[in-house]
Image (tube, rainbow, N blue to C red):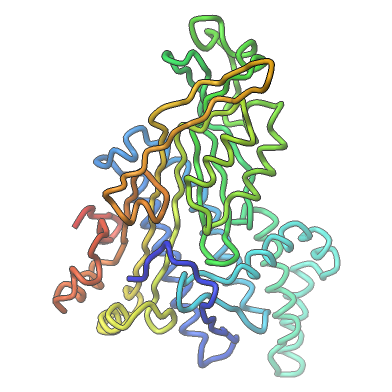
Length: 399
C-alpha cells in the first residue's frame, strides 16, 4: 500500500460524469466508502484492547468526524444527480478533491439562499408527474431541480467535513506535578494537497494566572465547578481566537507533529502542548476506480462481490513531551518554558514523520482479506499495518 506520509501534489484525478457507463462505478464507490466509515465507527466504539483507546476519548472524538465524513459523502452522492461531474484523487488518497470540500462548505453556508430560489418540493413533484402524463417525456429539468433541493436540504441539516473544523475543548483535568490545569482540545482539517481528512487532538497544560484563578482552589479543580463541556474553542478565552487562527495555519499534512508542537510552544508562552496526536483518515482503495499499486489492484479485482472490493487505511501519529525547560525571567531578557519532545532516533520512519510513535491500520471486508491471503500477498499488502477485518456487523481486530 502507498505510504500515508507521502504528499500527493502530483496525483492524477478521475472524472465521474453522470451517465450510464460510469453510474454503476460511482454508486459502488459511494456504497464502499459508506460501508468503510460505518465499520470504522464500529471499530472505534467497540475497541477494548489498544492502549490508544483505553479512555475511549480518542474514539469519541473520532466518531464525530466520521459522522461528518459520512454526511459529506451522502451529500456528494446526492449532488451527482444534478451535477455534470465529480472528481476524486484517484492515485493517492481515494477521496474527493479539496475543491469538492470547498463546494460542499459553500453550499452548506448558502443553502437557505439557494433554496429560496427553487420551487418547493411538492411543486417540483407535481411538475414531474404532469410532464410524464401530458408529454410522455422524462422531466429532466424538474428532476434535477428536485435533486438540488434535496441536496441543499441535506447539507443545511447536517454537519459536513470542512476544509477546517474549529477547535473544541472536551476534557479538563489537573496535573499534580506541575500544579497546572490541563485540557484536551481537538480540531479537523481536509488537506488541500494530499486530499485527506485529518483529525488533531492536543493535551495542553495552561500556566496563565487568569485560568488558574478561574479553575483552581490550590488543591486542584474547584469542587462542583460546572465547566460546561464540550466548549467551542480553547478553554482559555484569552487565547481562543488566536488559537483558532494558529490551528488553521498549522494543520497541513506537510508539517510534522514536531513542527506544529514547537510552533504552538513558541507562539503561546502560557500554553504547554505536552501531547499532540494526528489521525490521517486514509487512503481509501476501491477497485475499478482508485489506483494504489499493482499488487492491491490485482488482488482486489479477484474479489467476486465487487461491493466488498475495498480497503481503508488510517495512520495515528503521536508526539509527547518528556521534559520541560523552565522559564527564565530577568532584567536583560526572558525565556519562556519550552517542551522537549521524544523522538525514537532508532526508528527512521518516526524520525521522518517527526513523531514519538505511530500506528498504521487497515480495515478490509472479510472476502477481500481472504482474497489477499489466498494470493500469498498478505505480508506484502499489510506489512507494517494492524489489520482489521469486517465480518457482517462486527470488526475482527489485529489479524
